[in-house]
Image 1 (cartoon, helix red, strand yellow):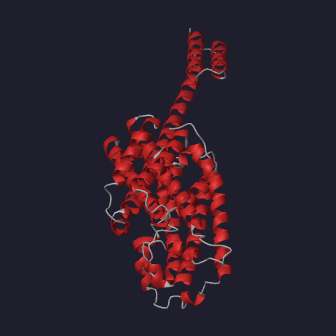
Image 2 (cartoon, one colour):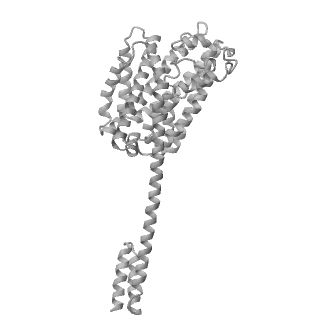
Image 3 (cartoon, one colour):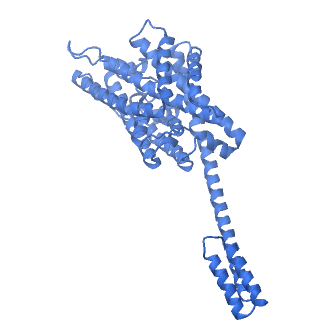
Length: 428
């Protein structure tokens, strides 16, 4: 494992940018209709509970990567297999996020540029940053977090001054009942993006303060959930449910309507900047989690894996999908068919195994300490018996020798041996 440390504030910035990433601009459908902003808040609650389970796993094994305690809990072969499966999952997620970023850039600005060239430039940047180390990525996150927050505040001001917000489009709240929420939350809202925080279990062992780092993760998830809910509410209040549902990138469309006379035009560049930054950090986290995991499993320096795995991701983008609509459709199916296995089923199996492992270790520790106390009592009895043998004068000198030897820094056996010799002299 790399000999590096990151601070709680840096993990907060990394997780916030990771959570916002593609979730701000990618349209996976408004399954809860105008109550989608409320569905995100419900998903946030479930996501916080899942993160608590992930954090507990980390706190049980604070100095071990998941690929290490998988083998400890499940055995060498099964644990190694599970680790490889998770690393492939992380690589797949990085590939899909790269496609999201590339397709948005093409549709919004660089329409004549080949998708592969845009993906190549992004992956070269990611690979170079990670080759310099996780600390470089963490420091960069602090800078870009401030930039994204300023862009968000400026975008809200533009939308407000443009007077294009209609709150009535959000009313009535729960007008169709709770049914749409019950349909939307289990299918996507708790998973995208909140449950994706499981990737940070590969980064948390590098924290310099575990407790504060875990708290920073909770705050990052909460802050990201509130931002996403506010963003969706703004999109619906500007575009309405029908247009937002059909739009490929609804936030891009929303910001594009915020032009103010001839003074401010084409503010949609803010959305493109936000997505590029968010996609960069989301790909980086997934990619680094996969690289450091494979490095740990096969005992290969992670720097030697970065560029070959970069090539694997780039090749995968050419085969993963033929169109953006197909890309979204496959992503939606994965959210409720495949991803829950990696977000819920497997983590809870590992968590139960970890709790059982710690309980058995605790019981064995108590049994061992009890056995040690019994041996000590027996030794004391032997010393007493030796001291009582022989005449009073010689026995007394023997006892004194035993006590003197036992009170030193040596072991008790030396004292017992001296006492026995003294007792023998008394008997003679």
